[in-house]
Length: 340
Figure 1 (cartoon, rainbow, N blue to C red):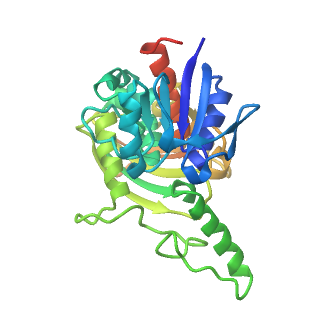
Figure 2: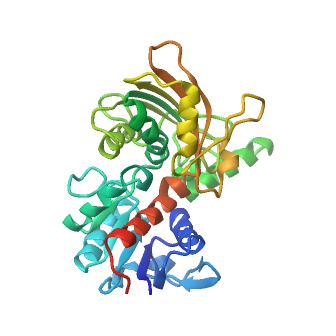
């Protein structure tokens, strides 16, 4: 016996990963439906060794379905998530629409799994921003031990976080650089992304921060601890998949880097790869297709009394989106829902 599960946005990068991960983790599925917009209706997608044909989201009836994993933008989510929720189907939403709603839990299972219990207020659970998700997995065990007071993070985010068109733009611009006359002007990004870095993700706010930077602050406070001070600089880099973060942590109590390493090695969802030698660390290309949040370069920050530096890398399509959503579904099933 299992659950009736819907994947909304099944033809996109994250939707496809959701289907892959549901199959890989052998989530107890009795019945599954893959939904997409009308223009993509009938497109075939894979679920384990099965092939599914997408159904029309606009006409789909969520009545009798248990869980819906949403991987569509906020505008469409605003229309369809309340319909699913009103039908008694629990929505796990990957967009930013509900993340800051006080009646909607924002969940990273390794960090605040108990928050899932609040889903009944709106029948919706929010998935955090990809850059936040991997960071709070790394921060949680250290916060439990030494109480983090301040975090300074710089991100190096892959183009897959923007979507397929951004991945195509990086690919085509890269090819165009080597073929005279085939240069590709920026369209997805405001500047060339090939062989470049862009310190601008999402829109600019009056403060001078971008919305991506604001998200990391607000979401870390909601998921982990409202007292933590966070400042972020978010940068898009010419990498297809995998977000990296340089994280500087200040704690209330002194925490030696060796003890911090031991704590992180034992923490759920984390793999420490930290040899102080050439190649003894994880890069984005190493994490693609993996579940873990990888930590490297753990060391003391000698410029402050209680400081640590670390390097954090994760597959943003997995832990930053699809995997986290499936893990939420697993917790929901274990603690809240009855199998059909």
